[in-house]
Amino acid sequence: MTRERLDRMLYVLDEMQKDVEQDVRAFEGRPFNGRTVSEYFGNQAACIATLAKMMRTVLEETEPEATP
Image (cartoon, rainbow, N blue to C red; front, top):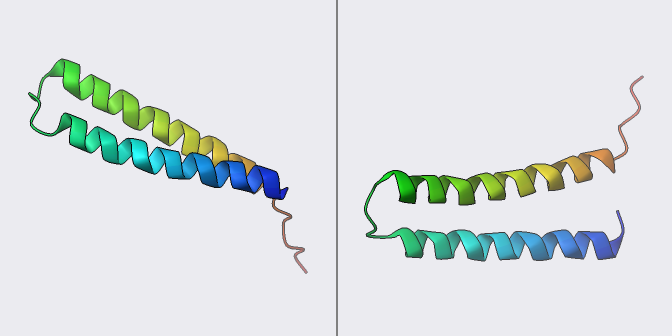
């Protein structure tokens, strides 16, 4: 993995962390109804999808160990 690619992934992770923290504050005290729940779950799903994509990239670019 190139340093540029790694730096980009680290940047995205930092931004995701900020977004999640902001979501928690934004949803604090809001009514627990279908609209807020679906919005919150949508935010979580986007975060999970991004993490899965990044993890796949890391795994695809990792050399497997040779087995004896």
